[in-house]
Length: 360
Image (cartoon, rainbow, N blue to C red):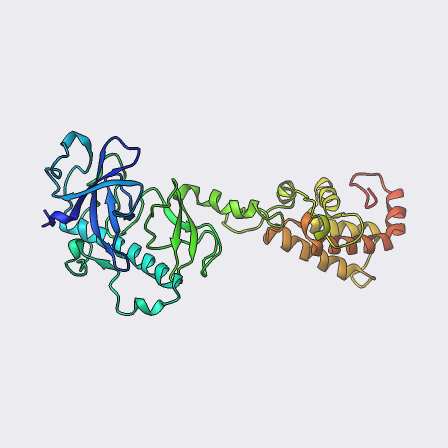
């Protein structure tokens, strides 16, 4: 059992509560006289002001057991056991991260980051110097009452998933893992704010492994120009034409759509789906029905446009119905096909039917 000073433990009575809450006091934030990093019996690690705080009606320091004088044991929502040395070291590392972020935020607020020079952000309980944790080791914490424990070797970790960026800030992209994030008092269920080194906040979300794909799709759903990531049986991003068309949805961009004339990309893509040949097969059908050689006008350009549209939609997974660039390519395809329309009509008039005609 760790040798824990009496000032390690504090019972706090919060406004509106009916019981005292036992907290493990991990230290005071260096640039504050009242803010302490505490660990709760519910598994939360955050900063609380133990003085000049309207939410804190009383705070009494004492030993783990018995509670401070005047507090009965059945009035305390507390821990099952004291921490071991390894558990205390692990929690202290997490507390140092929180204190570091808080000190940086305070220094940035007054425009004096020089305060951080040689600063140890976490002052030991009772003011007895800085905290000097040992390397974390041992099993996962088992201190909690009705809450999940922090995994060993990962201060602030959560067995329910991985903290990932839910916004693009500080070099992070949506979905990037945010290592070392420790849940704060601002945490709301599986969402929290991670303080970056420059003091800015990064919105993060706790994502279970099985929900990662769903989480990443949130960013996709917010942008009408992007389709969800879908992979084939070999793990490649290569979606069949018919499946890609089913995922598209034309949106009204209002004045942001600057290309004059009616939008035709969705109609063209749906036609190609009904034709059932895919866009590459459509090119060959166009050549065959018009009896065109590779050197005839527009044939090579028609082929290149089909390849570009397929790459953008089936492989890059862009929603071609909402992209001006794809709309321009489809209009050019129609121009080329219209130039050879007489040949196509003549050939089909002599045929026995089957595939849809180009004009359909």
